[in-house]
Image (cartoon, rainbow, N blue to C red; front, side):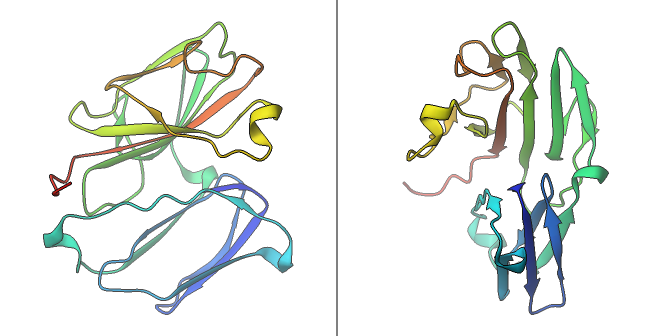
Length: 182
């Protein structure tokens, strides 16, 4: 996900381009891909990368690349919140990401996190977490954001929102458990 700036990318199977703020790069490495990413014209790009494991029987699947542009993704607006759906299904709408394993992904923005609450129902059988994208100024300098463990269905609001924010955004991600040895 490009949080700010422009990210140039390319790979050995012919995918290339530039992604801007809000765009998502969704890739299945599968049997293998050589991929590069860099900030446009050596400027800065602020990105978030999440890597998802596949079950053993699907690890050598075909390689797939998807540019999921912000302007072309479904958005759900309700209860003072904006849900930018990337993968999975919510409120009867399916996100555009094609996956090899059941997974959900959304950027959820609350316009008024102190007074609002949002119940976001991803698949109940999924395990998931949320990574804050908007943090108070003091927390955003020199420290890393820690994922918030989410029950299913997840609730966002005053108990998960940093108190100094007018706008609170999280990347919600979840998926069916792989049942791998721990």
